[in-house]
Length: 170
Image (cartoon, rainbow, N blue to C red):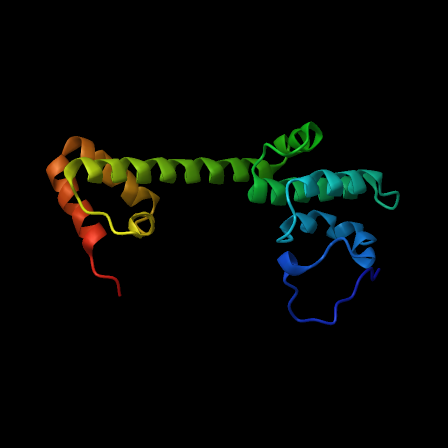
């Protein structure tokens, strides 16, 4: 069944105005509305309400759309703005565990970056304006190894950290 047809090869979802009447009628696109660049966290409740009230959806379709909404919304805004209902649905979804694992990884990387920058300050290692970006390029496992080295062999860690932070950019 054809519901919506686009005359475009590329649709930039973050540039689409989901409040247009034609798109409001396309219930299947409502979860994508949280990607719109001008959408704030309040869009989550708006889209959830419209999906829950859509008479044309089966309960399975409704659940699928709510899982997609929760996944996209939590990736963009975090899980705090999600309603209790969306959080409960997400807890039963494999997407949620994936999202939580990605969030834990981001937090771990952020903490390691902060630890290494604090270590660099304590050691008097100069930090260029793009210090965080340079360290981020090392990857999670290299950051972890460098933090461990900062504790177990601080002189070697300082030498390695200095090399990363002062290496010329290509």
